[in-house]
Length: 628
Image (cartoon, rainbow, N blue to C red):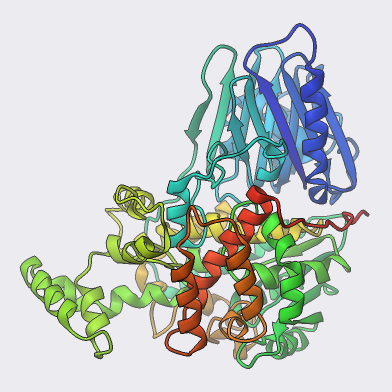
């Protein structure tokens, strides 16, 4: 596990570029939290590569950049390939030799053997760059789900690559804000990939690779897209397949020479991971956080689960004061503004876990794969509208639009008569297009959230509505929010996160489930819950999903009110944001008229991000990265 950065000049120099070499040292230093145990560099007359290493598996030859085949290839790699032992054995049978026992060398050998197709054989999380000195070709790729990050920035003199955006923005030059990305952000509470708020930076999308050859433009191609292909099957068959594939995935995700722990909330996802992990490490440690506010503390439930499973549990209670103190660090680590309050508990639970372990397992991805969000039941509740002719739907919609907002049933009629592609944009829908006109001074009628979602719906047009919703979440919410929070908040503390649900073998099982085995029997993740029956405590099996809830609704009225006001007044964002409207949102929230907490938080996170990255008026003091 590590962080990396790199540079390829558009044209080779007679001598290595010393300026870029010095620049690469600075770019690597700013992400030393991703790899405090080791640092390495490679330089030639066209390429600069830098690598920060966090030691997880103590393998001979783990130092990177790693050369291969008499120094023809150099690789820098962030992640873990879990099937590397099997791949290594296959390559040895074909005559390949290895000087290390690392998964890094297996990747580059696989590339030497199979070229671009190598990515289709990798099972794990990865972002890597391979430089072929002989062919003068740079090849880079990112894993199927986007567990590991990858950013790049094209300039006149060359192309920069990095694990975090901040490595690309270290110079004093101004980086323009992409106004279209800001408009998307106000809808989703994150900037959907490949967009970045810093307009000249892009994110390499999951399941994609890059190729750069001398004299040719950078190529960006997909090697994998998530698709659902339901197959009729019994609940017993589904349960067996889910159990088998999850046991296997958790087992390979436990591979490490350092202690492995796990995050534990009150829900079935993390509890399932812990229960399965205990089969391979009876002494696994678990970590939980909560809040003092009523309804926001999962510590007691998690402790009870830990006791029933027979594992240790370490818990922390987060205060609003702790949150306000650490928010600049949290925002700095996130790179883009990201308004998911879950970043707060993830940051603190990672900090606590790092005191005990260097690797943690977590339950991200279960909801998107197995149908776990309550909103996924909406197609069932609205099913009768499918039989209503289009003209009838239009009339009902027009009628419902004229009804008072508070009238019971109005929302139901509006949702039932609105096409799925226009009503479902993912798990977070903060500001609609009409509201954004009041918030955003730079609002453009030519930009809409449908720019992001319509291509997904088009690809999934042959799927049922539940599958379409899941695909929207996998291609937006999961990779743009959930996995960004997971990676950045753990890496902030030099902690490696592993997500056993986001495994291609697990996905192959999940994609085959029909809707009747996902939202059924009055619940979500039906087949998955049944598969976990007898594995997790009964008290958890059908417990209402909470995750790590955050009481910002309460805090913004009380402890955080003045803090929020100061950010609004101090931030130099008047070019973009109508502050008077935001202040009204805050006033209405505090008076109890309406819960505006998520909308206010979304604007606040942009303003704080702007102060840190653009204005540079809020400084972030970094703690020394933890070393082994």
